[in-house]
Image 1 (cartoon, rainbow, N blue to C red):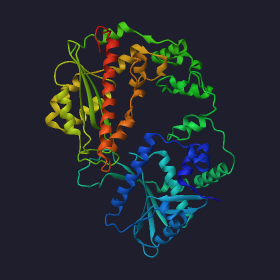
Image 2: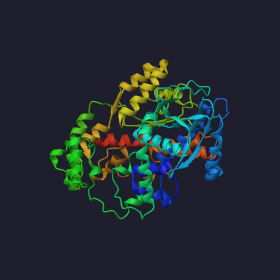
Image 3: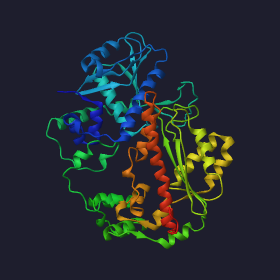
Image 4: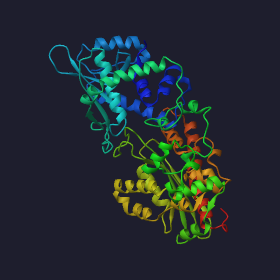
Length: 499
């Protein structure tokens, strides 16, 4: 009987079909860009954890991919008789296979006991982390490891990087020893059930909520092939968060929005349903124009691009903080003249202060600053104001001028092609058909912008490639703000302007 790795057992806990595919058809998996970024971040965090838990560098790190699994398991067994930290130690027993992020010797006489730490890039302990720890603990103990305790170390999102490669405090631990021991019987059953699944033909499991919880599954493209799709998927109804609605949908196994009674829906959801079934757009031009009328020209149209780091690289920043590295702003004068300005820093240095100064410079004046989803830009400006006190009066003044186009679009416009989304990328092709993000070369969404930025600041990135990324990022962010200009023009009823 083959041993199933912890990752495959976790895959089984998400969906039986997923573990079968992981074992028999791994080439069918197509990981998303965010999933790929998370894996890379996890690897970087693992390398840092080895420094934090072994500051003197006396530990041993195993690499099963290079050494081979058999060799890594044998070396792990031998190292357990030592008294040095072990990283990526492997254990196989009871039909399971596990590699521990951190194994720390516990000071006892005779044969050493061990403390296991699993390092997670999340900012808190999730339910699946508890199952993860239980699997690790069970397999290790079945393999004869004298395991005294197990903990999960996760990111402290409030921690601020002091610089100088000093990362103490980034990780905080939660002991899960009692929980892991209590789940030992369950783990034994999970292993048996998973082995039973992978030993048979591919199970027929329909796509559903499990495809994205707790992880986005890379096999959804495979699993959805041949499935009968609802003509009008219920997923097009936005914000179905009321428990009564969710219970009704689950009880009735509803997949089509036509089958949801109107009394369960709010005004926006009913509008989506009605316009979708009618195949016609809804546009209350008069109300949109009235709402925008108080905001006179000149006007600014603003958008940010940001990047997050699991492990901060710049002093004064936090894990997962949204770091702005690019802004685009279109300024529309009283006379209807449109000008574009931007800021983009690909130097690899902390861009925040220069970004804040550019924001002040490009938005100086009196008049509305239009954004699309004000919560994002307003939060970034607030963070900049708190970090750079000398700039806070001018930054806060810009924040006070912000006008959000998103709620105006949500209240007064809907096209069936939006499929329940009011993202600017969904609304723009409907309102302004001549503008499309999918026509851009290279970067055409926020995730791609972040990835491109990370590539650009990499030390090994050639100058020619960095220049190409600069061009792609410039085109993408400029379209974001020009899109807002054109949406404003339509919603404000300003067909007199040639934009």
